[in-house]
Amino acid sequence: MTRSPSTTTQQAVRILALLRVCGEVTGGNDPAGMVQVIRSEKRLQALNFWLVNPDYLADEVITAVDKDALDVSYLAIAEGLLNDPEPALHHYPTPKWFYGAYERIDDAFSLLASYGLAKVRRRGVPPKRSNNQFFLSEDGARVADEMAATTILDWYSKQAELVHLVAGRDSGTRLKERQYDQETYAEARWGNPIASIEEQVRKRLAENAVAAEEKNQTDMSEEQL
Image (tube, rainbow, N blue to C red; front, side, top):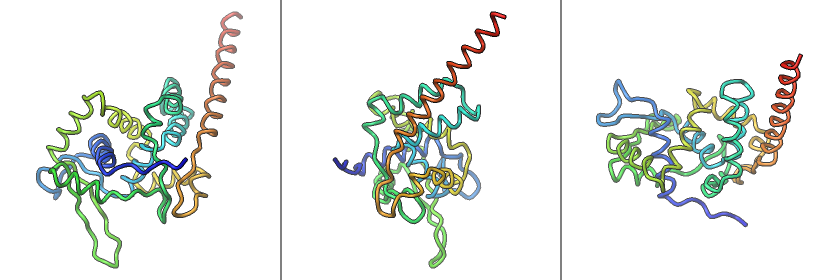
């Protein structure tokens, strides 16, 4: 069964959470009244992809654990991304276009802008490709914090925190490169939804569980010597 796309309001809530959690602090010549910013649409799109595709996010968490960038306890969080009902409710397969996963966000951002919660600044003159910068206002930050404190909507902020954890300070270009490292992502046809990697992620979790058990057995044996 094909899932209906997310609504404009759902997209707007996701963007608000991402701006608040993943946005850098403004400064310099940034617009007055704006407190945080994501400085490229490529980065925003890459962050959004992980937010709505919990299987890909789980795989990034496992990779971070394998590299000792995250504690082994995060494997349980990765498993929860696959098994808990909440991530599944917010899972929206994303179509792939010229630069990877892409979701139209103009209407959602216009909704945020109409309430004074966010602002977009477009730079570049055709035919040169423009660079869009996405700003969060003081009111937007307040609303995002209220959302994070609301049981019904706090999932967005919590998930954005996990996205921020695996994304780090990588540029939009680097995040896209990391996503293209996934064979399923890279081989998706333009215009088609990017397929799930859930089976692959479950296999990695199982392998990590076996490795952890073997390590425990080895440690116990050494203690008995």
